[in-house]
Length: 73
Image 1 (tube, rainbow, N blue to C red):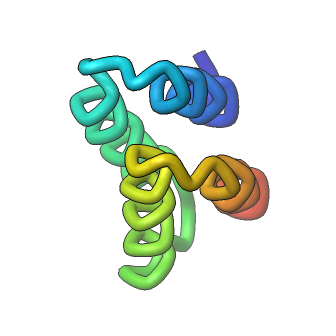
Image 2 (image 1 turned 45 degrees about the vertical axis):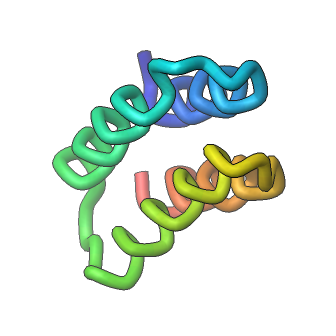
Image 3 (image 1 turned 180 degrees about the horizontal axis):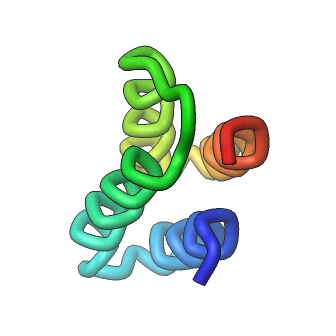
C-alpha cells in the first residue's frame, strides 16, 4: 500500500476511533521516515503532529498529512 493510501486509511481509523490507530500511526511514521527523501526534523515533527491531531479528532490534519507525503514522496 502506498504512503498516501495508508494515510487515508489512518484517517478512516481515526474517524472510527479504532483502538489500533496509535500503533498503525507509529508504523506509518516509520515508513514515512524511511521512504521519504530529504526529510528534516521539522518535517518529521509536522507529520507526527498531524497524526496526533487526527487521533484527537482534528480531521483537517489528514490533508496536512497527505500534503506532506505528496511534496516529499
